[in-house]
Image 1: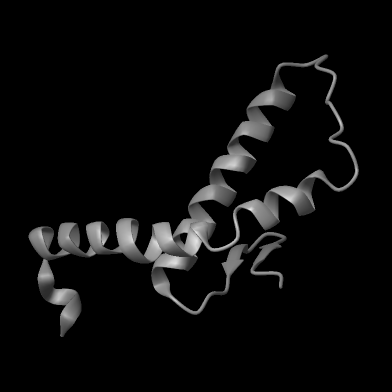
Image 2 (image 1 turned 90 degrees about the vertical axis):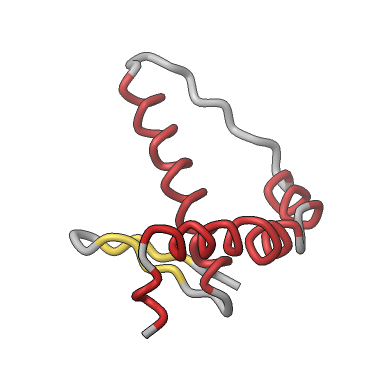
Length: 91
């Protein structure tokens, strides 16, 4: 399932069942794009190609990890922080 879209001149669109999952997806997508832009700005850097099937293997190894991290760790922490700063979002 594809959960992210980069829209030309409009930004990023992330789809997920949980807000915490969506936040984590957009966070890691932004980090990956930032690393890529900084790497390409170096100039004559040879970009290594990963072997065929590596992306699928990594995805299988991490299945469920992102959801656990976002639902159990990151999103509750962000909600506590929002509550401390301004709990008006609950209204």
